[in-house]
Image (tube, rainbow, N blue to C red; front, side, top):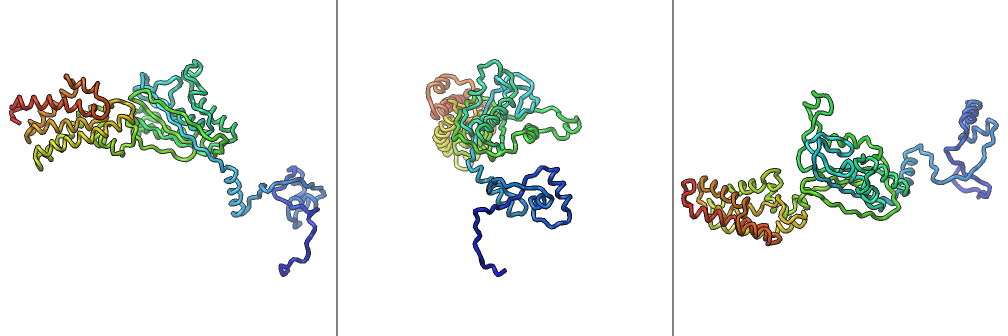
Length: 419
């Protein structure tokens, strides 16, 4: 053959055979055995040679026989074209702590000295994931489908909510490709042994590890979205200062670096300033720790540039703190959240302007300021209540600082040191 076209055949009566071809298995097996050893092109030829009469039915171009790498690539392109309408949903859930002895996250019961408060089992992981699925198909949120006012959902297992959401996705013609859930806890949770005592003692499981182990076995882990609905929007409302939030996305990872109570990422300049580099996030006495951390900085400034420079630094931090405190307080939804401690740093520096470079004077300045900042005598309390925004957050601590300065100057000999 030289590759030249000799004649054009009338195609009206021609059919293109596709593979795979369909036969009743016993019949085609008997046909193969009957013509064993003959050279035949396909199953239809085998059936014909064995005396069967194959018939022609309409096929589809999508009916691919995957044999070679090129066939596999073609099949992947076909599937990708079918799933071109990809939807991503994101969910968020939060519950406050209450009395109890365990928390439930992604269906895993984690021993703890408290429980999460909720109408159902308060499973933040599955609630967030349920909201993500509902949001992806524009079906509202979990509260619309399972109202907390209905008694039948009291203490209900949250996997029922998730199963309902997954069923709605399937009804819309969608499939779930992957899910990713991030649990952010405010403090470390003590855990009891869940395996053998020796293994638990050697390596106690972390909550994230136990949740990941359970979620990896969940039936919703290997599907792909093609949701008909276009959008789903639903808010989340934190109900207490101490809570465990969960973030979820149903297609690809959804990541958040936000510190839960701040409302901003910790790397945000306002968050860094307001929390004094994260000191405000310490679980106990953040204001006292911030005042304590201010001492060596004040000592260095006074030793290198004098107490006048320390006074200027205190005023500059006061001005910067007004902006940072207002920004973070607005983002967190609280008037004066306890993790804002830049006010303690600036006010402590102001008190130390009246103290010489002597450890006894610095200790006296620290103790006096903490006493007045905590007890808040008049007008400190009045300023805190009546002055709004970042200025109010900063100003009440400066008023407490003036009390401490006054006692340092009047005492003159506090701890044997004259300022």
